[in-house]
Amino acid sequence: MNNSKIIDLRSDTVTRPTAEMYRAMAEAPLGDDVLGDDPTVAKLEELAAGMTEKEAAVFVPSGTMGNQIALASQTQPGDAILVEEQAHILYYEVGAPAALSGVVSWTLPSNRGIMDPAVIESHIKERTIHTPGTVLLCLENTHNRAGGTVIPVDTMRQYYELARSRGLRVHLDGARVFNAAVALGVSVSQITRYADTVNICLSKGLRSPVGSLLCGPRDTIEKARIWRKRLGGGMRQAGILAACGILSLTQYVDRLSEDHARAKKLAESISGLPGVSVEMESVQTNMCYIATAKPANFWVEELKKHNLWLMAVGPNRLRAVFHADVDEDDTANAILAFKSASAILA
Image (cartoon, rainbow, N blue to C red; front, side):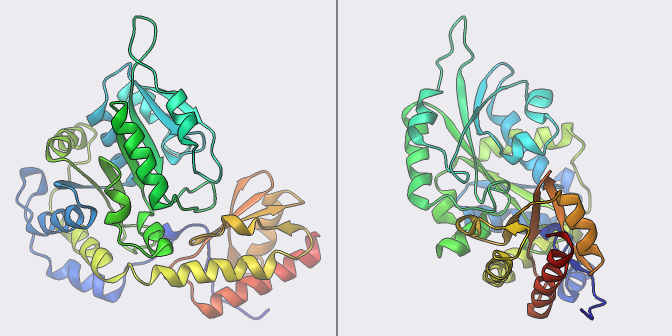
């Protein structure tokens, strides 16, 4: 295969800003966001709140911070939260729910990231002298480790109504919720209306270099601002970054369908190759998880020889994530790289 370009499918976080984003950074009106007077940040926050049907939003450096200040703003130490057992909040945020909020995390099984409402209800505990009270249900849509899978709108509604009936709030880790919306063919608000707070990432498929937004009720977001400052997330002339976020939300959502199509094309093309297998039902958005007969690290190294970069996410599991910097030719070359590697490793 004659391909000198690196095809980086490790994550959709590797996207580079567009020329339009660089211009927006240079021209953005600025202030001091910690003092509340950066007009570009304010514009981004207002835009995000409107799109998610929330009263307010706060711009933060990362999705991890967005999730964790959401938890801290809606719980007290010793409270219990319900979380899917492989959720990003637990798996990739360095124990932050315990370290920062002091909460007990009950983990629940799922089918490709979708939990059974009956199982959720059975784990809701009333606060007593013996048990921590359950106060928050945490969801992830799309679900990263399940394969970028989507929770349907009706299921989101069931979760929300159950939580409401039992006095719980709902937090949605919507790092890739726009991918979910595009996959379902709905507006993002049709998903986010079934959560009290939602964290959305700008720096994944939406192409911004940095940043996430936590959206929710105004009083909760004001508490979250305090937590943002407490954790060192207060940024000053952050409008330089927020300018990219405005473009992310207004111009780069619809094209996510291209990433979904390319992930499916890769999955379909390699699923029959010796030495690898793909669970096609899990390829719903921009991710493709690949099971390998030989250790995944062997595949990572062999694919690198063909300028294809992937991430090993388990002893025998690879992840390929499609994004705006990967086009049709890159996808074709990625398929050829797998065929070449399969001939060596199968």
